[in-house]
Length: 328
Ligand code: MLT
Image 1 (spheres, helix red, strand yellow):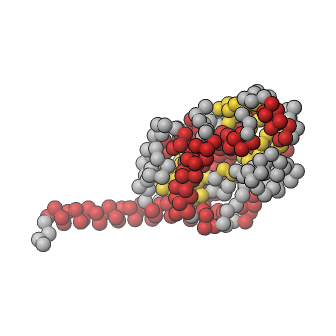
Image 2 (image 1 turned 90 degrees about the vertical axis):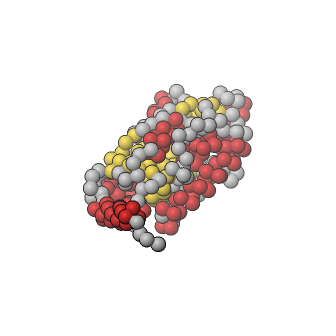
Image 3 (image 1 turned 135 degrees about the vertical axis):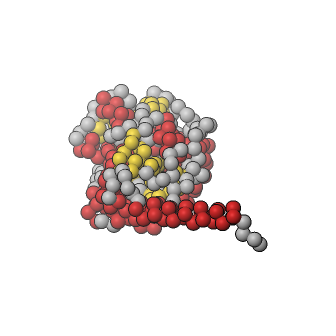
């Protein structure tokens, strides 16, 4: 078939595009990178993201800047990230709430967690503890459940917005403990925790990395933990499973996501920077000492995160229907 001038031009353009993409990846990154954290600063997502961003930025040779975009349980920030240029300079710190439960909670979601994103790498998991204020009348999780059983709806739990981990885990807990609690939404777990300390709300499920210093400081008391195995940093805190809800288990899973269309080389470069960081025993121990649960290396890979996200979207659809979890 005669090659037309147009075909030759198209071929040349595609070749140039391929070269420029390869050149991009080779020199990438040439400027600071932004990670969108869709909760207020000071919460567990923000804290974990900053820990990892610092190490990834060092390996990439450019600062990784955290941009807090709070609201609607993380779905506002996720929607912004989905529309960002797929150029390797904007990523989303995603978690099980707005990247897996949200499609079953929000009727109008401005993004699709699977179709609009590429997994870059999974973070280690963060178990949670049930916190009450230092002067709370609830000294044990059994006390709290007994009160809630006798006073349906009177107990209120702070959370970081509809579909946040603190919201989902509290809803699962209430459903499985057969109690009714009233959710109170904030722009992040940080502001919610402040109100637990002040007694404005009765309690909340918060992640270990931000709960630990507050428990150590005596401002809140952990009366239960959600991991099946005791987190070493909370040796005397019973698990929910061994006290009020047999087989109860919950942890927050996280991942870094790029807008769909981000070059594969760029994703590979960011994954490589994380893999190097998590392989550093000192860095891994720094996370583990916060009660964060390290995963097998294979679980951190981009393809593993993509598979996990799709599986979790399906899982949470079942959980939300069964628990009849609704928008606040
Ligand atoms: C959540 O509860 O989903 C988040 O961890 C909240 C936060 O990080 O502020």
